[in-house]
Length: 131
Image (cartoon, rainbow, N blue to C red):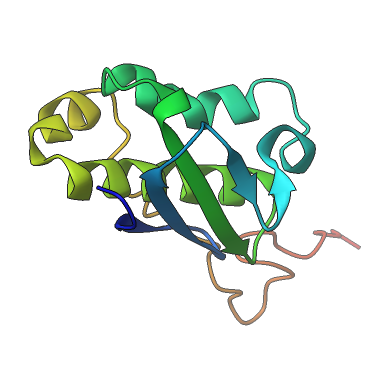
């Protein structure tokens, strides 16, 4: 497993993340920044890295590089989580049941609903006035 990497693609809402895992020293970068510097909200970074604990792997054995684009903070976080889980499964197929049971392999299908004619947004109607 010297130069080989394992890749997983994750998507959520408008976000898309490409996650690569390779043997290394435990470095985790997102778009060239350290993961804690990129995901600054409390618990976001640890929520992503938690996939290693579920998979019973030591994070310090692997380098993780992520390219993520589009969407907001939550969409990007969930896209990275899904991509990391898919990369771990590509690395070791036996991890699939544990990651599936913890919900890391489920793609969240919810996306923004389209705007309908006669409404202000997808469901918000104009203000009703009696007179």
